Length: 386
Image (cartoon, rainbow, N blue to C red; front, top):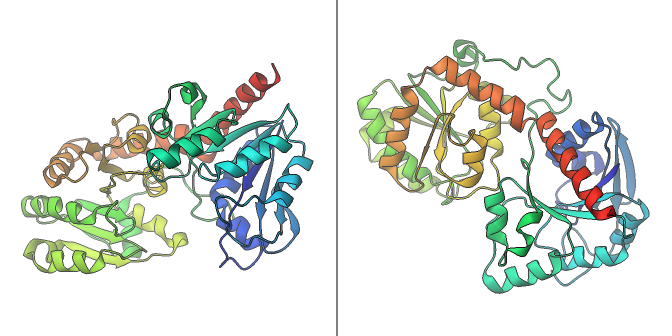
């Protein structure tokens, strides 16, 4: 079976083809895992230069056209689509739900045997008018990949496409991209080892890793943690972030509270190759997300046995084994967050941490995703050929 992954847009700041491969490493890791299952996987993207590149058994094609790194919703990259057709795939895996006109045009070019699967990569569904347009053009797809079926059905205005929604985790991550995490110990790491490197301390230690924006909702976390901090004076909350949209509000909230000023630590941006030590320094992972396509930081935390105390949203519900790992709470509700921390603390820490690691390996790792995706690919391809 031949599967071609296609990307319509690329980041104009990426210097070269090898850098772009690294930029899409979540898909690259998925493709490499699929190769071990006998699925030939090709990655194809538009880029500023024409090039082909093969690494770790995965063929990458880069196609240059006149449209630049991005284009208008009504523009169609015909040269790129014709190149896709030439690869004679069994499955075209499209990484965009909102460039639906382009996918409709692609269907016109493809052979009848070739199926199209469109994958959702985060973002809420648009308003009714735009959603109706996307639904119309995307109806040429044979299936849709969402992290959960519930997310998929929210995108469609009629029940007819619901049977095409197939659940599969959006992707996984590497801590060491170059070595693909070879030699990394998948088991629980005693926290004192990593804390000696990071300087983190506390009992318990909570870790935030995410953007400081209204969706991740750090202010609700701080409100809830203030209650926890008063009850557990040795507790600490460390916050890693890149986007600092709400940094001023976060700093103000911390400075206005004696408890938060003592027990909350703003770390800022941490290089990805170093972040594993921070997950391995923490007992609990916290986020206040109102919506997520999946949750890469959560995936990394689970891999390290960092117990989740996160919001009850569809993707997080799935990624915590239907809420059995850690504790879930109501987004925007600081009292619910405080109660969830209390619930998580009551569980045996080491046992719960190992449960998180086991669930990650079985359901969220690249190997697990490839196993699920391969099953879906064969199912869709067989249905297309009938």
